[in-house]
Image (cartoon, rainbow, N blue to C red):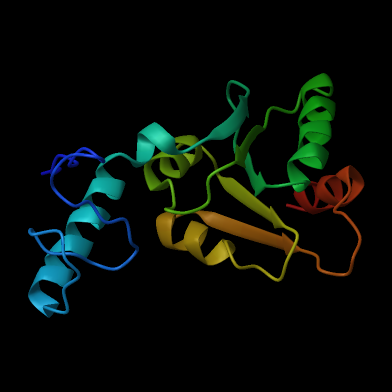
Length: 163
């Protein structure tokens, strides 16, 4: 499925380009060759997603609440996780480090026992649609903020406390 690379510096001319090339190594405009190449790359990525998807997870037993976030909001969510743990209120936290391709199996696994899923984003909700698509049978709550201020642990506590 994966063709070998020709060695650079051998008698065969090797070109490096972002253009699609045919089996002969030259740029092609053949739509069939281009389509086959793009589909091969897509399948290669999708088959290996678990090997290059990075995340951090904090999980408590018997939890029914899952917080999903990414980026700087993960810091505030970690504070909330710690406070909830001290208070004896089990929750789980999934901080995604790789957003695309979407790590669907990872998200499903972490949401398996959750009754409530909360997604916190520092934007107007671009990733929430991916989460809802992956978890159609779960109650997925969204909190987004895009006003120059960071989402705080207090805001997260207020949102998850109201459910």
